[in-house]
Length: 223
Image (cartoon, rainbow, N blue to C red):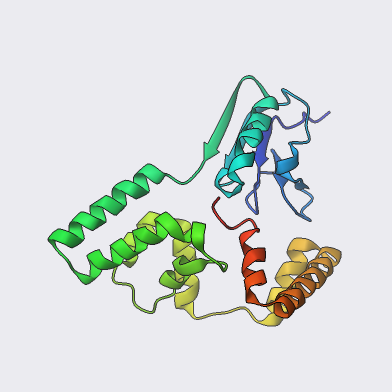
């Protein structure tokens, strides 16, 4: 009999491990269990030797965070390992201070652009009202005097967004449909499409402020 996985990946998104148990809010992938983490982790106490979540905690409402962490420890075995990845505020603040100093001592287009970027690191994902926010706009500039700096700060995610923009290639409607059907399944695709159309119709009917409110209650915002 195949041994049950003893490692748990919580809030995995599209990055999952087939030899682990993977949880996310809503998924049609058979390797990922759909689960509302705010309602608890659906496993018995002491089930896992390892519990891991990356860039999940900062997306939860602050008042729900402690309960979520307690759930992670509840399903963890005695002397097990829990690993939590979150944005490094200390590093961002130190970088902000460095950029501020550089601009006050040796102002240039590059130092000014670095300062603008680190301000986005500090605030954008907390205050944005649309997907991607100003960070995405920054990455889509035709010319970035501090491109190397931004890619160093963001890693492969920033490099991917930048490469996609520079390639000038955008997916056709048919390609988008095929990609979503592959990811969601035909039934899941139509459910999501109908849900989007209903939501979008409501947004247009009730005006933009409701659209912003709907977005900010989604999972992209840092809480």
